[in-house]
Image (cartoon, rainbow, N blue to C red; front, side, top):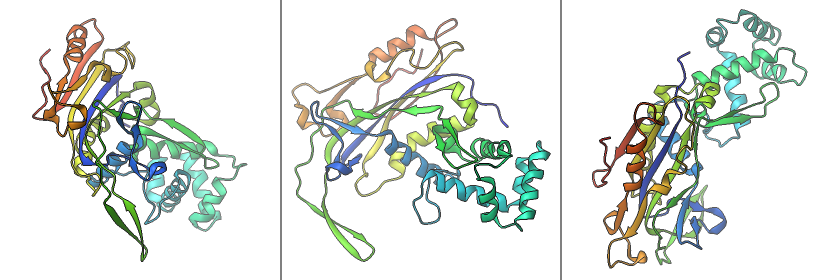
Amino acid sequence: MTETIKNNSDFLFIYEAINCNPNGDPDQENKPRMDYDTKTNLVTDVRVKRFLRDYLKTERQEIFVDMEGNSKVSPDTKLKAVIARSIEDENFLKTVFKNKPDYLAVYEKILEEKKNNPENVLKEITKKDFKHKEANYYLLEYLVKERFIDIRMFGSAFAVAGFTKAYTGPIQMNWGYSLNKVELIDSNSIVTIMNDDASTFGKDYRLYYSLLAFNGTVNRNAAETTGLKDTDLAEFRKGLWNCISAMPTRSKLNQYPKLYVEIVYNEGYHNGYFGDLRNYVTVKPVDGLEDKKVRSFSDLVFDTTKLEGIIRENKGEGKAIKEIIIKKAADVDFNEVY
């Protein structure tokens, strides 16, 4: 197995949403999620991870948190299906247990006893009194570290008997919020939603402009558990930058990445060394423009001076920062030379 990442890092990700609904709230008629006290727009980490997972699928990466066939399933149901397919593949089991012949022997004996019926084998190895759970956990670890990139990134918890284990994801993101005050579009338009020969009607809620910012972390200790590799992290950066605009739907169209800044720490420095990186970015409307009139990125003064200063002062030998990774849109000013 390839070595896991060796450094902790924190990242800032900012993208814009124009005339759309970045993340509907099912408890509020699917209106854009809002903090009404501050008039800021909210987007959950789950929404962004879904964008990323869907994008990774288009890149031919194997995803765990996904449909099983044409059905939505729980993580436990998905795991059972994955294990059943693994049991059916004799060559795959030999690959998994090539360094554990005793574990392979356990599975081969059960397969023989159950006449190679994967459903019956699954019932046997998920019994509470199954005596060879170490073989199960070895298989689970292999699946996590070698097959499913989304678990290597974000972790998962499993509650299937014989496979009960929680993997803390090395990549964590909190909810995003808009750096600007947003204005909902005053619209009474009605959309028709077709579902199995029946139709329902709902309002089409959107907002004019939202500049959304997320703070996240990449933790080397958690990476040792899930097996997150440098190549996985490169896929994460690429996917995060591309996924939102690359996976449009009617309500999510017109969303584009603006800035990604990752602070990679030297050995001995831990996540959150500088706190939430969003605290070092300020946004305000251009002179003479009211918050409610903001319609585009050019209507805002976007200032990253504080963040650039933190990087400049703390990068170098004997300091906290080892490396800075930056992606930016053409209309974003961010000093890349330190």
